[in-house]
Amino acid sequence: MNGYTAKQITELLQQDEPGINLRTVRYYTQIGIVPPLELAGNKRVYTDKHLHYFRAVLTLSRTGETLAAIQERLKDLPLDEIRRIGESMDMYRPERVLENETFRISEDVYITMGPHASGELKRKIIAAVTDVVKGENRL
Image (cartoon, rainbow, N blue to C red; front, side, top):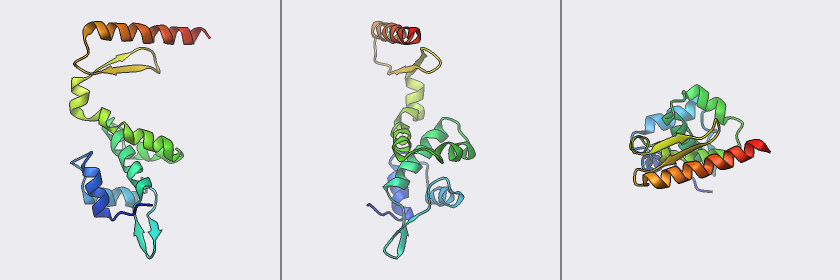
């Protein structure tokens, strides 16, 4: 188990989100949006589990969720799901949102493509995924 101080975890998070600071890390800990710190010897530390929670919080906050809604959403999720949310953080960087195109195929299926995909490739992908979704609805 990796153990981190508040400063160390802040520095790790700043690699993904330069705007986060020590004060925010401590605030999120205080309000309980991340789990309580763990004991390592006689010290309380952040762990990789906390890192996954922080990344999930940052990802969801980029989607416009409030902290209260994020806290509610995360409270009963397994760690694997929290990790998955945090790993998608890169998709929600402002510059990526602006440069990529997102297409809605159905209520549950969206496709995001980068700016370098050709128009023909985009049409083929959308058509193929639409066919799969339509076929799934017939089952």
